[in-house]
Amino acid sequence: MSEPAPPPPLRLTVDTAALAANWRALDALSGAARAGAAVKADCYGLGVETCVPALRDAGCETFFVAHWSEVAAVARHVPASRIAVLHGPVNDADCAYARATGALPVINSREQAARWTASGGGACHLMVDTGINRLGIAPEEAGAPEIAALEIDILMSHLASADEDSAMNGSQLAAFRAAAAIIPHHRASLANSAGIALGSDYAFDLTRPGLALYGGVPRGELAGAIRPVAQVEAAILQCRNLESGESVGYNATFTARHAMRVGTVSIGYADGFLRQRGPGNALRYGEARLPILGKVSMDMVVVDLAAAPDLVAGSWLTVPWDINDAAQQSALSPYELLTVIGGRLRRC
Ligand SMILES: *Cc1c(COP(=O)(O)O)cnc(C)c1O
Image (tube, rainbow, N blue to C red; front, side, top):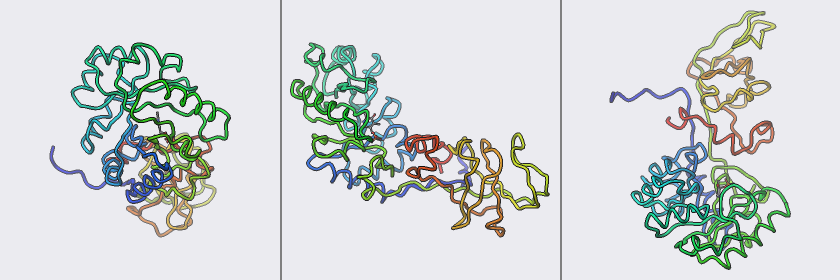
């Protein structure tokens, strides 16, 4: 089929100027270090196709993904040698793919180090675990022969609690410094978005912001520097008039107590507008607040049109997606609010 699909009744607008400005702000806040960009999970739900070219044009040169399956989409826009794959080579097929594409693995264990060397070696990155206990070699393994055999570009570690004033930040910093003194490398990298706000001690040669690029503010210090990036809108598919006593949606959890005009809107949990965002929340039309009635469906949600009675099918509504608004974070972190954004929104 070559017939292009008609425009969808929902849209995600990514403000690429704000994204670029956020990268430049984080790069400046990184001091003498350069900022890279975490572009895993399809740029935290906002879309590689839109975001990676904007980050590249802003000056970003190092890109982090989690999976090997994420390499190809990013490599359409930047040289593969600038893509670091955080999960590392867990089998020989991963090593072969790294060699075929030119993307570099982040080695996370002595076993991965041995596998990479056996497959031919060459430039790679190394993760040292300084306390988050997910991936990475232990600091005591720094002198192991498998590690000594590596040709390490970026030596990195990851902060567990950079969004808090935790004593763990200082202890991870000290452990990372100690590892960096022993393990030969070209560039050292510790800070994520929140880590950048901890100051120049944490910046080393390269920072790895993710969330803050996409408009998230994990620490107050970043509030003035970071602009919102994502906006979500959805169209009314149909307007209806309810009689008193009629109900709305699955399990009839809302019943009209008087005659009312409602609109069925084209966004649902398949788009990342999760069911917990239904009760007590509202969509907006300009300043008008349109409360959500009943349960969020897979592809639809119903709103009360009392505050904007003249709306018709095809009218566009704003779907609040302010990831820094505490009310919206009642059950989901800003990371989750972004990464649950559904594929139907990214494709439009
Ligand atoms: C996701 C990730 C980042 C980015 O973290 P943010 O908190 O989104 O800035 C940096 N480094 C590693 C290893 C990551 O997994």
